[in-house]
Length: 158
Image (tube, rainbow, N blue to C red; front, side):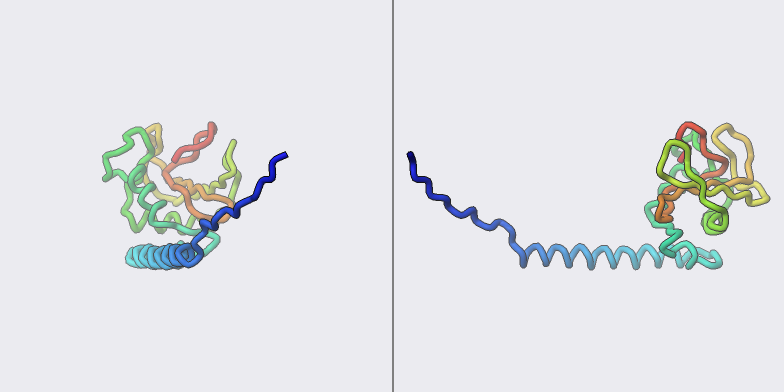
């Protein structure tokens, strides 16, 4: 029988360096969060604070997605529904949609709120002028997307 001696495996976890990276990432994330909130505060929209609460949160990334895909002045995604109202009006519509009860999005863990603005906001994916906006969120209230019209039954639009 062989006598095996177990050599200790060197600890490859560099705690001081790891803590430095953790704090750097946390500080950077806080700084980016502050920049993002400052960006939303620059919009000429009343009650902007309602877009930044934990239960209804519009991030810069989500707003960029919404405008890239659904703002008529951005010539991408030609078959997607398009807002024909101003950016502040889009953001105000998203803010106001919060008052609607959330409904499950078919075949998804996401939620949707459908809000009739009472005036045209754009056209849906079929090209019809609509006054309805749909806002899709995750369960925590973080806004994923928003678009004119209603979600398609096969998992949505956005």
